[in-house]
Image 1 (tube, rainbow, N blue to C red):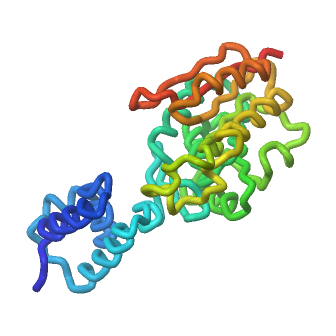
Image 2 (image 1 turned 90 degrees about the vertical axis):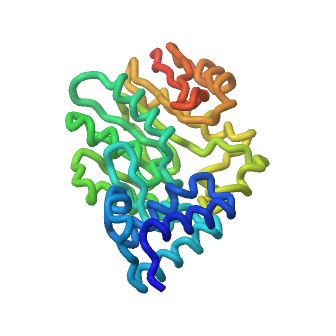
Length: 281
């Protein structure tokens, strides 16, 4: 018997709730919008419309994947971030809303006029492309160790018609010898390999190499801080996203690397999220 949009959403939200989805109603709406190829407003404007058999089968197939714990972004193949729609793949992290705080802080500190920005560990290209989309006068370079991530970021650049960015394969600074930047930004791996949250929720499906780092999650942050002064113009900024409980130690790492004006800024939930500092040489 055909089911209405309203009833399909209700049943799906209940099913997802029973299977520990943290946002069952939102997940159900996003998945049904994807199946119907309609905006969310359609679901509520036409809630009495009946799903076709093909639509119902498609919706149920996506629900089964979500019940299994697969992230919604991987199921539908994209995630909206900043003002952009970004393709996502299991080879890269899914961009989080908290990372938009890093973009905001970077834009506040970018000087007027031409400049070059480096995004280390670019993944989908979310940070790099957001900055490039807001500042047509700058050039943004995004690097990632994984060739598949570089290809994905380049595809997102093309899909969003952004011309002032480029993406390269590099292990941090290895392929950037002699290059200097106005600003360096990064959302590097910062989770302790022993963190129990790695076996819970959406992160179970995300690449561990993009999540974890040695030294209780601090190894890559330390490396970036130590190497960044060689690639920053005088007075250039370094901004790094990190865990909610790492602010104190990350500020120490910045200071030990010679940065000044070091501070930690909170995310939208009031948790320590981004530490930044200025190159003093």
